[in-house]
Length: 96
Image (cartoon, rainbow, N blue to C red; front, side, top):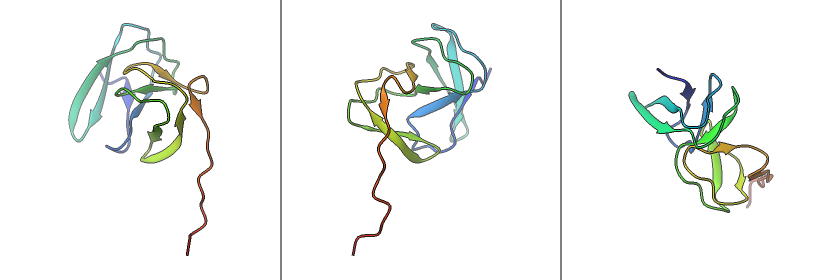
């Protein structure tokens, strides 16, 4: 059963579309194939979980866009939220 989603294959987080308990199987579609992993912690509906290990300092990617930077190593299946992601504003002005 699909209980999470990603929008872009570049995403390293999935969004829970229902509450997920630690130890449950998380399944989502990526490139037409079902991908499954085990939730490492409880995930509240509409919150994010890591689809792979994300190293400290690495961008967190949701919907194909950088939404922050991992403050610490985040394990595959772990909850990704304000406790382990730092928001960083990127320079949006074009450099000439």
